[in-house]
Length: 346
Image (cartoon, rainbow, N blue to C red):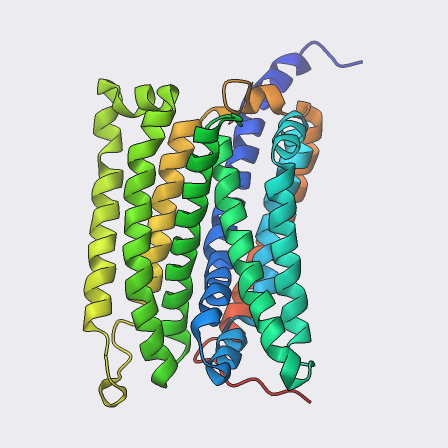
């Protein structure tokens, strides 16, 4: 039996451990969105590329895309083991978009390998599957986010709102993907990536504005939280910094070369870095809007958490595993830094 002195300790752990796991899960999902977001974006943009450019685009993400998806597995794993009550509710309410996302990721993964081995007459079909799978996964992820924000309401308005977030997220991924290609390629493909980035920036900015305006209108709880007088001072830096980053990306894209003979490497990292910053700001706003709910108006992080004893054991494991994932990813990006090289199959 537990000694009486252990109860205050357990009570204290029951307070901070769920919060710690919530932060870890949030950071894992944010890492996934940025890292796998750019390779989903590259996949979508590949539909508009020439065949030889498509090979180079896929080569630019080849060493990284499997490792990027590790963060999704980690985030969902934390949800399952640390917040089992919320895991059942969330995946039960989202089984159709989750199935669509998994179908898209599967299409992308299979096409990634099969396109390199297929006859030339079938290669285009696999290229289409790669682009379509990337788009399907991106829209499904945004749709799930929209449903989560509204507490899984089953109304036509909720579906339209969720679909709008899905399309906006796909545009943001395309911006990340174009920024990645600007850094990892040169020549005609880099110039084409600049054009793609300009178009994706417009769609992303429109999507951010539309979602920011629609969210408080469709959720009374978020409206009250955003526009309460005591919260306005804490919230205003987010839209200001968002507009600033959009302006910086636009200015950087205008400064990048428009002709092959004018190409240089000055500032090629700016569009990708600032696009990632947009996602960080959006994530901050989302976390502020939802906290402390895991399932809006139904389960808080403390309601859904596992027993403190279980969380403590898993926390020790997380402290060991997460640095290993970070180190592996850092090594992969260090080894394969620099410009992408054309694919070679033996």
